[in-house]
Amino acid sequence: MEKVTIAIITCKRPIWLARLLDALQEQVFSENLTLSILVVDNACDKETKDIVDKRRSGRIPIHYDVEEQAGIVYARNKCVSITTSMNSDYLIFIDDDEWPKEKTWASDLVLSAKKYDADIVTSHVISVDEAGKQNWATEILYPAPDQSEGQELSVFYTNNLLLCKHVMTKMSPCFDERFAMTGASDYHFALKCTHAGFRCIYTDAPVVEEMPSSRKNIKWFCRRGFRSGIGFTRSHIFEESLLKAVLKSSILSIVRVIRGVLLIVKALFLRSKGTLVDGLFRVCSGVGTFMGLFGVKHEEYKKIHGK
Image (cartoon, rainbow, N blue to C red; front, side, top):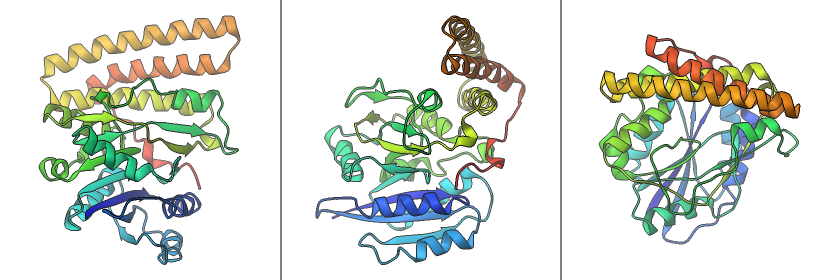
């Protein structure tokens, strides 16, 4: 019997958390798997606890814990430490604004880890708006995947991710506190895992994410691009030689800005808002990639989007 812990980090999003917990209770899995759900509340929110308590009677047990120190890094590390103390064979991360597309999602990730002898398994995210539809904003945030089944990846994120037990043990603490409020701690973790020799593969086990209307604007995408660029640079500075990190970040910064400018020009001819925002997103990402060389930070997680 193998134990699987599905970890959710939440921060004042009770409605979305309830939707996810209800969806997870519908997961189908074989008799040789034991599933449990772990909710780590990073806001000590009474409404969040009430949501969990009302769903404890489901067939998949739910564990609730609190991480009082604000910052997604601390909550992620708590998920890892609790999962390790539970002696689980696998940890699966899913965000509280998501839900599995298929009822076999969790077991599909586990089966892929075994099939490909992988240390880490990931899949893509399908972004939709509040009406459940896709638009220019959702397509920029999560374009259609171009990975193939079983493909080895060097970059992955915790919005749809399985970690095997030995990865958690060797990499602990998995997530770096220097990224507590800035984001990109999962990109940095991926970089560390790659350097440690762990294999991550892609499998077709998507989750769906609701993109709130508060993010459907140019300002949010520009900030997101700027933050992701900074996160890239900081990650490589922390894990590689300074010369290598500076060269890599400088070149990528130029490439991102050029690609962004070309998209902006294209958007003016096509009169396409989506293409324009995508171009601005890439330009801001390039600027952020360069600014990260000077220690600039952007604390994205100070504002909570969602419900």
